Image (tube, rainbow, N blue to C red; front, side):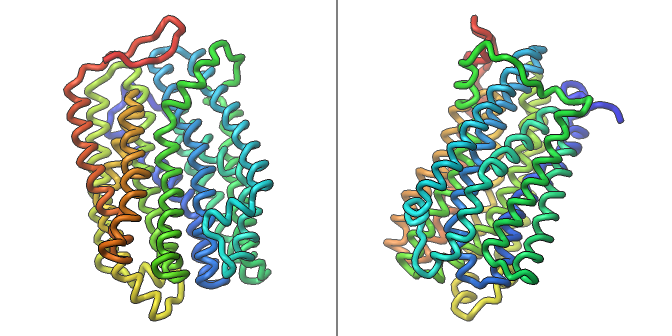
Length: 454
């Protein structure tokens, strides 16, 4: 098969070649949690979904850290390759790998030592205590697997191996679903079975991803580090991806705490259904963004401005169509969304139907916000990317989730994300117009760093 030429091949052809593998990989990653939710809802009960939702911020943290170093290093590696700097590309990969290893050790150690106070802070209560402990202990033990799965998925896409990334994640996801059923139902392992299935499925994904390191097309090489200041560049460039993911965990935490205050455990169960639906939508949109990222980064390094613009426009059209689809599902079939996760009581159904219809409105522009954040990141405007992530993920959500319920009750909680996403979209368009008017030149500094000169 002819090797892809990201700098010369048709933009439409490249976009399509990356789109399906990228969406498949990011979507199936969400299935690890989605499968657990579905199986736990059927095999353990609604409180099990609440317990799992309490722990979702941890999963977001691990995956976000993998993206921090995977996307941060991957973008810089691709830009280096676009500028024919192979040694610099290899150094970015090596430094990113070392940082990912360091954080993996930290998460496992701190998670085991401070499990009780940390899960209590997340919202563990007496009703969910045993279930949170069963799932959480195993989840923390698997932190390196989740982190490196996200890390290598990103680097493989930047190393022109999107299909292997897709195969690895799909294989692990299918394996996870099969094990979920076996361990939860025939073997009756409950929450511990769901967590074990997720760990083993992720292990399979990681093993498949690692085979790329031994292929003839691999350019991910470990080399001695001559410029440790590249670590700072990886952090700065990847931090918006980290925020994008970890903010999902922060939002989940804040919603859980507010819902426990206003409506109790039943609110957390309903939000568990919604947040898992949102996880799927976010994963699909992230797949579109991850399609754009390596294509834009390498063409940006080669200063091919028209190709960059074409790639962005293809991404915009794609997320627009997806937004229409997801909003339509929420408005027309809210009860089916609920019943996909649990056998709902009348109380759950009466709360979930209006909640889903309101919350799903946020999906109309969510994809644009994720796409623009990644586009800015890939064109070395990490400040813009970080501003978008902070705005939608922390600033607006954390303010609105406390203010809106004061005036609108629980309806105000469900309305937080539509308002936050809509406002962020307006800001994104302002930043995009400002970016298009500016003339940006990429240069190397004396110490061979990649930097931005406006």
